[in-house]
Amino acid sequence: MGLDEMVVREINVNSIITESNLPGTDYVINPYVGCQHACVYCYAEFMKRFTDHHEEWGDFVDIKINALEVLGNIKKYRNKRILLSSVTDPYHPVEAKYKLTRRILEALIPAQPRIGILTKGRMVVRDIDLLQQYNHVSVGVSIATLDNEYSRELEPVAALPHLRIDVIKKCKEAGLPTYVFLSPIFPYITEIEKIMELSVPYVDFFMFENLNLRPTNLYKIKGFLEKFRPDLIQSYNEIYNSNEQSHQYWQEVKDKIELLCKGYGKEAKIYFHHGGFKKQK
Image (tube, rainbow, N blue to C red; front, top):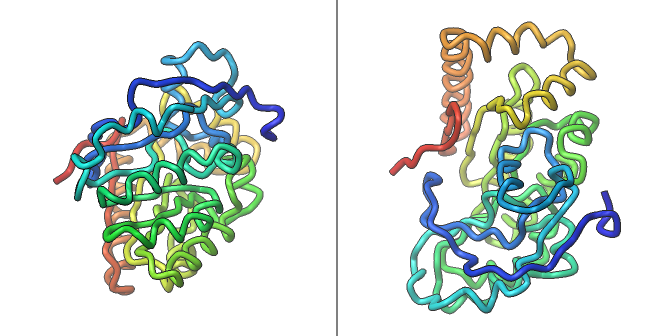
């Protein structure tokens, strides 16, 4: 959906930096409410209930227009780990116009927090000049599949997978620490070995997250499988309706991932879970 078709509102907020329970993260910054990428598996759709939007998730974006005004005393974030972002994408298309992510990054440079970027967009390369000014920074892209047709169905507005790998390549060539987040891993669909093979020259580490089915995304995932992979519906039913099958399947995937990462000499950060992240030290 183009920006001219989106429901876009400019809003004022009381704060822009919030404490986080995500692993490896002290704070998160979400410059926007909503996300144009409209991923059908997105867990962040729960954010909709905190707005007065009636549109589908992915069809609206609220711009936190006073973001810089509510940053507050940035000195307290020195050496703190800040992620952009957790329930939106810091580089979805609307960022080209509003530049909130860029302006926030620029404002935080004097405080030197440890910045983490996670995106499915290409625009992060625009801000390489700012990211190079941080002592501690990492740039990651999340990839669920290399199949362009699947990607367009699952992540309608996100950059195509090969373009995300190119983003990591450019960031690595610019001297930035980088990673690929294989997320969410779709059983029997996500090409784990191939994604790692293509991206390993450009990453410092890998992260992994399994696909979780929730009330907000269950019917969308089922619709995707019915359209593209009806042959897998029975397998998904077995994995997601049996604790024993689920544990066995994901343990096998975990073992495979650890073996691959060991072979590549890369760290594997694996966050397999059921119902959300738990803080890990």
